[in-house]
Length: 281
Image 1: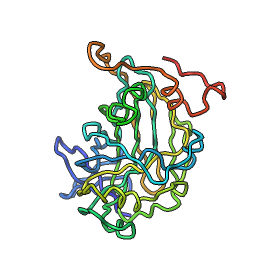
Image 2 (image 1 turned 30 degrees about the vertical axis):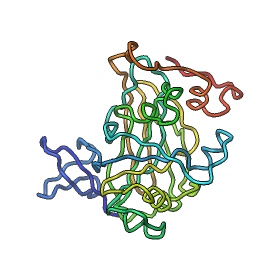
Image 3 (image 1 turned 180 degrees about the horizontal axis):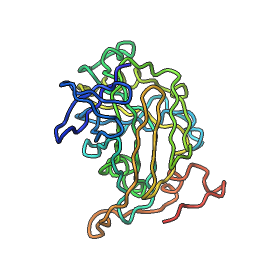
Image 4 (image 1 turned 180 degrees about the vertical axis):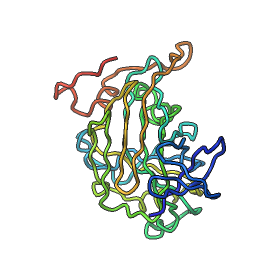
């Protein structure tokens, strides 16, 4: 399956093709993939994410999946790449990973049937839909700061074409420990359905990204942690968590909070009944 990566090569944004452990630029230059400075594999005009799609995630919260998917928007300023730092702002505590698959649009589409959606998809890449749940009480509807704060949308390392999403594993590791273990087979709505659903009223353009949902066991991470999301056939997306040097301003807007809603979402729906304790500050 062809895989395309965008990297910074000698200070220039360069499109490359993966050849084993190397990346090959159009002029023939080669660089080891592990040594490359990766950029997001695409530059989307918009990033749209489904709220809840994996049945294991719904079961974790004792929730019933809705009759149809619902969505939220992550601003493109949240975009991040393989190897990039994910920032947890000073004064915030509940930064959660969410290993996912990103759908990348290849052709403009509007008002298409699910059976035709595949022809409008350029390919797929790995994503980590980080959430800053400290703002969940104030942004629960829009999820704007929860999911849209800077650095919270890493995707990569490459765009893989001709990939069949059926029966593929999705696994997340934190500091080498397996923390999420899911499959695309537990998704209520597949990739083609999601594209066709959004495109009923929103025109999708080449490069646009749709995030397809996470399996169970999203949990908080802290500065110093390394988070890796591996999707079968797409590769591994690696990011590290850092603490923000500046505190959230207190002279404007709602402040980070730790309500029951925040804790329940960050630690899992039945956290208080399983004796789970909040992580260290």
